[in-house]
Length: 185
Image: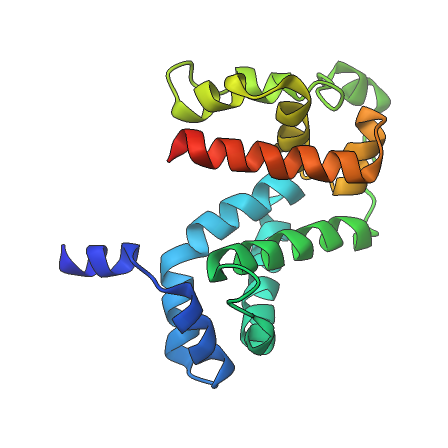
């Protein structure tokens, strides 16, 4: 049980500094602590297990190679790691040139939730704290957060879908995340 307590209290900044010094133990601590959650976050974006596995591999290579670029004065280590993962996952989607032939009839039968981020909210358990906090958000902030983090949209894509300026979409996401953090805290 003691290792679980140590496991839960990872100091990301220290682990990233260890990576920057070339200490494999730093990367191992990050991997042991966050690999499953990083995989889940990446999978939500790329939506294919094999691609998510490849992306996760690339994430840990990038962490290892770029750990010296982490600046604790600009944010916390966990946020930096998840930003790296999200960026690589989104780049994977953009760069994926593989095409799969799909029968048009199959596509037409699929439900289209792309314009309805509320559908993501409704799939959450009614008693979940996350759902309660998301429902408490102003509707535009909630839509931005669901589009960005559930559907894997970039800030530009969120702004386009909501037909608002990019700066507005970014501000809504930031303020929404701050409100969620406060609500869930």
